[in-house]
Amino acid sequence: MIFTFHIAAAEGIPPLFALLALMLAGVVLVSLLLLRLQQSMLAGYFICGVIIANSGVLDLLGGGESHERVSQMAEFGVVLLMFTLGLEFSLGELRFLRRQAFVGGGWQMGLCMLIAAAASTVLHLPWQAAVIVAVALAMSSTAVSLKSFQDMGLEASPGARMALAVAIFQDLFIIVFFLFLPVLLPQPGVEAALMPRLGSLALRGGLFVVLSGVAARWIIPWVLNAVSRTRSRELFTLTVIGSCVGLAFIGGLLGLGLALGAFVAGLAVSESIFKHRILADVMPLKDLFLTLFFVSVGLMIDLKAAAQLWLPICTLTTVLMLIKAGVITFIARYLGLARRQSLMAGIGLCSAGEFSLVLLQQAGAANLWSVETQQTLLVASAFSMGLLPALLKLGLPLGDWLVKRGWGRGKPVKSDAGTLRQRVAGLTDHAIICGHGPVGEKLNKALLDAGVPTLVVELNAETVRQLQRQGQTVLFADASHQETWELTRLKHARLVALTFPDATVNAQALAVIRELRPDIAVLARARFSSDVERLKRLGATHVVNDETEAGRAIVDRARILQGA
Image (cartoon, rainbow, N blue to C red; front, side, top):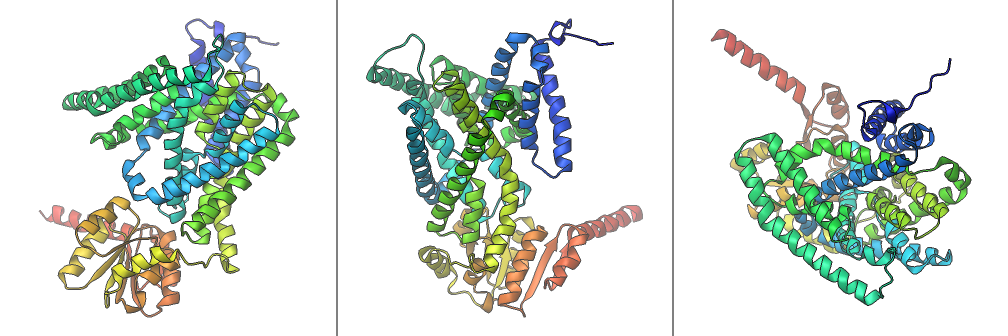
């Protein structure tokens, strides 16, 4: 017996809810499979959308109306994702990474856009389309890149910091570009000349900037402050989301796009005193936002069309990732990064990005190019993002392979190294403390109280600035790199303390320390008992194990309480 049914006709089940249920259930199943294969879940989101779009399920949800619901879902996912990206934007990071951001990011966007625009012109695309394609392909994925670095435990590495700096510049660039996007997209029934349209855009953009500035400076902080006094977490979260949707709605009313409004809403609260509470409340939902976005992108893919276009899709994906990786690696090397870290930065930013997909969707909806071109650009961009986590993992052994053959032993830029050496030139018989978290801070204070000079090696920008203000000798550097230890005057030191519990970084640091100074005492910290023997074999004089110390403290406390 064959059973047929029509989901959209089921009483009491809205079609949009049915679509959302299918999306989330499909994501769980596909992601479980990919995790078993040790692949990124982000690829699973996209694959789930492709399966739903090409399995005929959308027809069961309402036939022709399903495409409209798909567009609404995609728009909603974009709004939520852009808000979280704006919320994570940091002016503090921009100030600290300004050279890498403006010089590196400026050169990266300029060179990549020039290459993409030239290729678009050769393919006889109109100039408006060439500009949009150039910007879309020059953008990189902030979410995928930084999440991949975090999953690998490399978020504090110089390569990841370079990627972050370039991503910050890209975010700034896209804000401005979104203001001009309505001029590039054809509007039905509007045949106004370019200058009047630019004038109208300037007025609407200026009005939006003023409204956003007023909201960010006075309205939103006042409302959040009033809500925070109620101590209601639900109301606070509702207020934050309401601010996002409200500014996105204003941006849409002014013809500037919902995505820009949502991104500016995130920026409006990113530097407020409420930022960390907002992050705590909203960030758990970020994965859901990312899921909705990537599934909605997958819903736009027609497998039949993509199968016929497999050659241009694969060609575009390969060329895009190779060119961007090469350009960014060259720029990072020019800015003084070691070659291995330059390579990691290049791989981390070689894909297209979330804004790429947003731009391509809007351009496709405006019929700026053919359906075949739209499918090629969308699939290639999404495919490059799906490949990024796996390629970044391959970058580590590739970097090690190149290092063994002498490629990764380059020195940093002399001016930067000279500045750092001047700051530690007077140190001798000192202790080198890697990491200035709670453990490193206590150790640093104890050594200073005992009259032992110390040098702190730290990768947190705010911590470095704070220590500098306190007069502490500190290096903003990575303990896993040989160049760092050459700057620390390791040959004149009496002690090294690795106070962070990351066994991988500690192992890399120990290899360099023992090569340069085999006789120095090294204290290391390990989170798990299984890492203790490994670090001792690599040369740690003594390893403090978090699990052992916590267990001893709990036993002692239990004895005291029982005796009482």
